[in-house]
Amino acid sequence: MATPSDQPGWRPDPEQPGMVRWWNGLDWSDTRRRADDDVAKVREAAEDAARSSTISPQQVAKTTGAPKNALKAASDAVVSPALALSNPFAAAALAVGIIAVLFGALGVLPAIGLVISVLGLVRSRRLARDGRKDTGFGRSIAGLVLSLIGLVRWLPFIAALLPQDLRG
Image 1 (tube, rainbow, N blue to C red):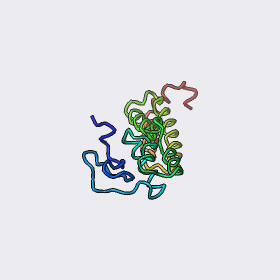
Image 2 (tube, rainbow, N blue to C red):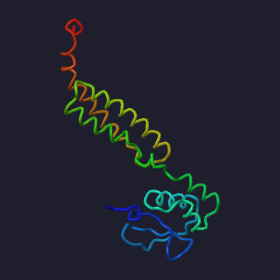
Image 3 (cartoon, helix red, strand yellow):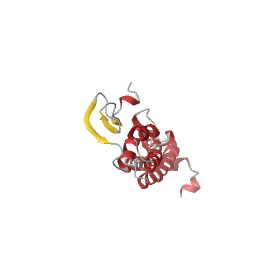
Image 4 (tube, one colour):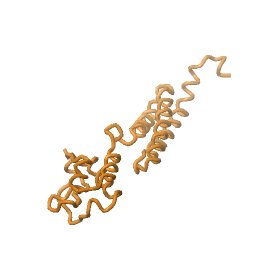
């Protein structure tokens, strides 16, 4: 099992203080850059460190000698553990959508899938607005379509359960 330190990312260069170096997951590459070239690069290094290392943004800023505004930018870039899964509603919508098509449970699972899909779409919009790349939009749409198919597939069974006078 891979540990966070095995994940690729920009890390403080062990050989040259004030520089960051690309760790490819197995070995150091020859690619280096000054960590304090600009705030965007420091933020990118801090995001990579937060996702794939045990190094904190404060340590990145301290090792690179970054200015205080870069330290703030690095701290702002840290993603909380709750947001690390970017969009759990999207994955749940897809899973429930697949199960809804197969089993349906008399329309209950497709209805739940529709609700979860809408939550996934709302979350993906918020993630896109925040500049995240993996928003889960596609998985949410797939879950929505599958849930709709599941609902349509199970409608005859639901209609058969209704009293005769309501069926028309």
